[in-house]
Length: 298
Image (cartoon, rainbow, N blue to C red; front, side, top):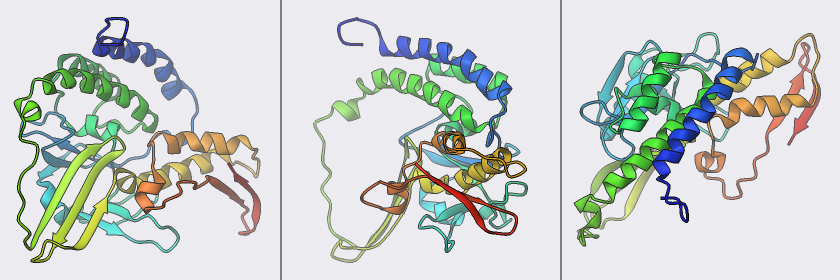
């Protein structure tokens, strides 16, 4: 309930989704926004019956054509590889199980998939709560499955928030949550473990290995923004090429390019393990001769 008003949160969110639809649809379909569509696959978590799951379940890796494969999070290394490029601190995860290699060429991407809210809506068969399921059906009727419109990440967030509000009521009655058993005894041993969850910015994977004394010897993390590193670069590339024509540009470039970045709600500090979080957006205008013409930094 919203404090002081006695209004269920899920009711307010359902109304917010409805209010957002018309202006969002106008911007998405009518405005000539750059970076609007890139063709990628998607990764998310689903239950055994294919319902969207944010906490526990199996991974579903979907190709751009909608075909998919399901696998256990512990087996992620058999399906996902991480590419290292010399010009960035972020790695580039890609779907090695597709057998096509890696490329962030916007005209011919290879192995590229996305995570976060739009991905979760794309990979699931349904949503297990009634209000969010109704919105999902309308969303798919309008945009298909899988939907490739980048700015619809924001619409997808509202549908997911509605699901969270509905599911919250169910969790409050979950005996595992209300139980007094809050800690499981652990004996140190050599082992490997993989944990995963659907964080707000995308699928979060933690892998740890320990020695006989339980001391961590190896760690690998793939966070939501890391998964989206390739798609973000593709969206920025597409936006820049759409905006700069015949050598004409202005300072509005930065704000417009940022629209394609912010749709992913990135956390560059998380993805690079940077502590200060003060990474600026920088746009460099380069002429046909390779010379830098201008630079904009926010």
